[in-house]
Figure (spheres, rainbow, N blue to C red):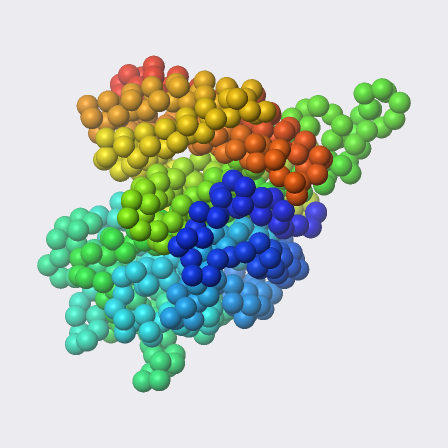
Amino acid sequence: MSEYLYPINDILFSLRSVAKTERLTPYLEDSVDNDLLEAILGEAGKLAEQVIAPINASGDKEGSRVENGEVIEAKGFKEAFKAYSEGGWIGLSGDPEYGGQGLPSYVATAVNEGVQAANLAFSLCPLLSLGAIEAISLHASAELKNLYLPKMLAGEWAGTMNLTEPAAGSDLAAIACKATADGDVFRIKGQKIFITWGDHQMSDNIIHLVLARLPNAPDGVKGISLFIVPKFILDDLGKPAHRNDVQVVSVEHKMGIHASPTCVMSFGDKEGAVGYLVGQENEGIKAMFTMMNNARQGVGLQGLAISERAYQQALAYAKERKQGMNAERTARAAIIEHPDVLRMLMTMKSQIDAMRSLIYVAAVENDMSHLASGDDKKHAIARTALYTPIVKGWITEQAQEITSLAVQVHGGMGFIEETGVAQHARDARILPIYEGTNGIQAIDLIGRKLHSDKGAAMMSLLADIEAEVAEWQTSSVSAYADKVKAVLDQAKMATETCLTAMQKNPVLGTGLAYSYMMLMGYLVGAWLQVRALHAAQNDEKLDESQKSSWEHSVAFYCDHVLPRALGHIHSIMFGSTTVDNLNKNVFNR
């Protein structure tokens, strides 16, 4: 089992040369210079490698359990969370007014790549806290912000999202959890399921954000409100005092992320759990999407992170494992010398390079959406919305392939739990499911993002790709630019087909959604791969070996990965009737 190494050089290159973080400089009071960024990420790497990664395998084996109504997390997790919190990592991009450090979110994204790769199960606790922090920051009253944000940004209190119910999964309109006014507070009653880190002993309090319905609320999602429901109700000094009427019922036994307690939570078994309204009544869905969008980009980052971890382990094994003879038939060879193993490793690496570029481009765009003004802000908001389902959906789909290939590189040993590589595949399998299944991400892309504005935001993205590719067609990367342009031309036609299908029938049109999401992932990945190579060839900080590595990655991606987009284009252009004609009766045989 290989040790995890935080890929700081790849991350720095992606941020500076692909995501172009200098775009943010005009909007920052104090810019993040190279020395500061390297110092922050250097320390983050140590935390990931030395504190969080060592408890990944042991946490997977031990899992979590319920004792006397409390969740007991795996050994070492509480100490790791304390180190994480005391290092100030959760407050990196938080509002300084409440104790945050006010850094751009791309810095936190770069830090979180290491935390998530080191230990995916552990990383889910701070991920959910960050989503809760953002929702409170944007939607709660000043009183609630002052009461909860300082402790949450300090990592002293954790946060959760409580959306799903036994009869309301992706369909939030079916939420039945009730809230009734009781003086200045509300009483919450109902059950929530699949609550990540719904209970634990790592923080002094847990701040649950809960979706519930008020009496006489409108039907559907328009009648949902959001409430803060703390595990411990605060006293007059703002300190946790007595236990709220919130109880963990059980933790699920899962395929992966064993050390992350996925809880069934019961609110209000007695007098009703005390809750505090966040934002306006019946507008909880708006605040919920703040949490969800934050989490969706975070899950995309998890897809990158677990892929990097699996790739590192596969690469190390391929260098060590001897099997068969070398090309000259003179000696036994490490399996990395065999062409098919090289193919698998580069399939992993080239996609990871593209995934990382997309993650950080999206992170910088997200920062622009908060920091910029005027047309720049509008453009960044639209682009962030467009990237989010691709980041979550396409990247987590790639993580399935990459973690599976890591097992394959190990051969029979990959199927043995002791090697540790199987854990990555098991852990990664949840990524296309939670925070909105990838089918929902695809429908979001083709519906809310493409159809709703008649393709304006997408056409803007495709125009930007086309303009940059045109510049490269007269440069040293022209061969790769030509390959991107060929797919881009067909992607534009596929986009028109999707728009027409959605205008004709917004329900049947979603049959094209998954292919469209995957097409855009492969195309955007190729665009950013060529951008990375163009930057690498002109980067004096990179030596010839590093430049050659980028050349091989991009060449392989364009020849072996990008052509997958053509299959999705074919499905969009010619396969809509096949999907439209499907119904439940065709499965009766």
